[in-house]
Length: 106
Image (tube, rainbow, N blue to C red; front, side, top):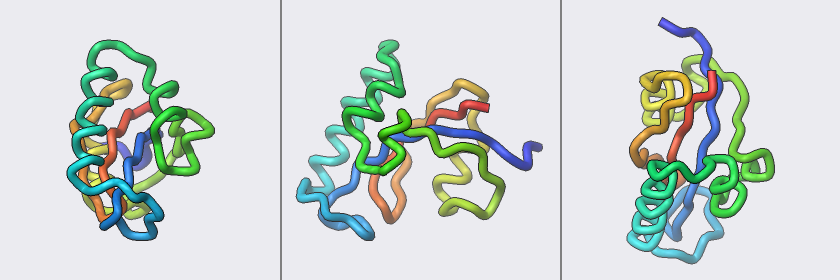
């Protein structure tokens, strides 16, 4: 079992998210992240989508979060990231910060 993974993500915050200044509703955020997931599944570049859509400062780096170990991320995010195969992309993951798509990079 891996002790560390590297991942990128796309985060869509909404008006109910923790530390959010987003004005979109939770339902609007969910609709948009589902649309982005369709694009990822169709082969659109994850990094480009992160730069365009992600509300996380990591968007400048294509969503790259670098390497992290267990306990570094909120449980829902960690569980999804560690379950992915390298180059795999998660389904939509909901955390207190909003909706994420996670791509494991190593």
